Amino acid sequence: MTKPFALALHGGAGVTPGRDYRLVEAHLAELAAAGRARLAEGLSALDCVDWAVGELEASGLYVAGRGASPNRAGVVEFDASIMDGSRPRAGAVCAIRNVQSPIRAARAVMELTPHVLLAGAGATDFAREKELPEIGNDPAWFRMPVGVEQADIDAEADMLSHGTVGAVALDVQGRLAAGTSTGGLFGKRPGRVGDTPLPGIGTWADSQVALSCTGIGEMFILSGGAGDVAARMRYGGEPLDSATRAMIARVGELGGDGGVIAIDRVGNHSFAFNSGGMKRAFAGSRGPTEVLIA
Ligand code: ASP
Image (cartoon, rainbow, N blue to C red; front, side, top):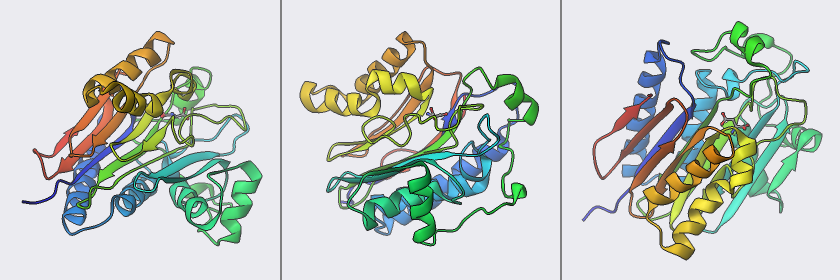
């Protein structure tokens, strides 16, 4: 019998009614299908998550990587983290500047240092030292994400609007991994760090579940985020869906909005969100491929 494998993706919580998301839908469908094929061929969950988040960042269709928007000082600062649930091990960067792929910088922290999280100038210097591709001074490198215009960014600068990308995967060897990458909240203060680069909050993977969150990072930090879902499952034996919904309900009680994608060790998936939509996709050995926006 084939061993289960699965991939879930998100392109951020929050959807603006009436906007055309066909490009995003097509992109998520393409990535889900390609990821499914790669996992079926034996790609590891970690490499799959790294690849998928890298593609989401590079597309410019989401508020991460090429789609990221600047902070109040006019500078783009990224947050990202990746976690390999089979060891476990994790790597993360926060308030890093000038890297083309924050998720690759996070993976480099995991694989090339004894640390988990590098911040600010130290993270940016580390990426340069490891010769990770840089953005340089070219503002044209950034693309405005689909559904977001400069006027929205200006208008929403104080309203905690946001966007992020993430991926979670289970490979045929039963290993789980998760990764998340973001430009953070629109109009954030320089140095502001959200949930995305925090293993246990924005990203988590262990031997039973892999999770990636999106939404107002402050409330995910206060709710316990991805780690709360994993703890509900580990200590309380709570089913996956009930655990993800409970965490998102708590985010809502705290006044936040957002969502989470998750895959468990047998390939079940869960999408939970309280935002108006979450761009998301699932593909795996169990069940049909799903691409959903609303
Ligand atoms: N969680 C991210 C942050 O707070 C934003 C998002 O997911 O849209 O930085």
